[in-house]
Image (cartoon, rainbow, N blue to C red; front, side, top):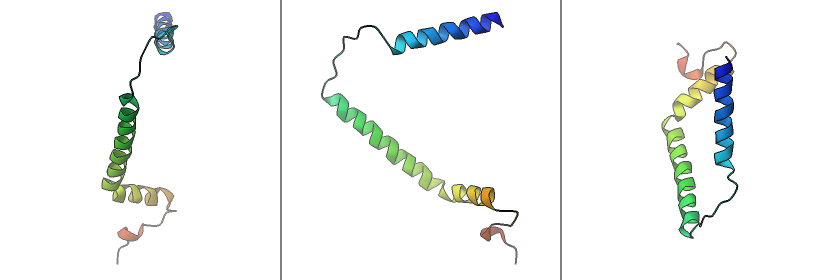
Length: 78
């Protein structure tokens, strides 16, 4: 138990040290902004594509989740 807690504290300390360095001598060239914008647009388009591919499954999930004991419209037996 003590070793697990010690390792967790060390890991969090190292993570904070790497996330907030004392001095940063870095240069961001003008292409960095356009690259970040490309990543953002690609992520949004990819997410929209995934939602489009699984849209019927998402609808069915929420219909079953919010129905109150009644069958969804597409499962009603005649």
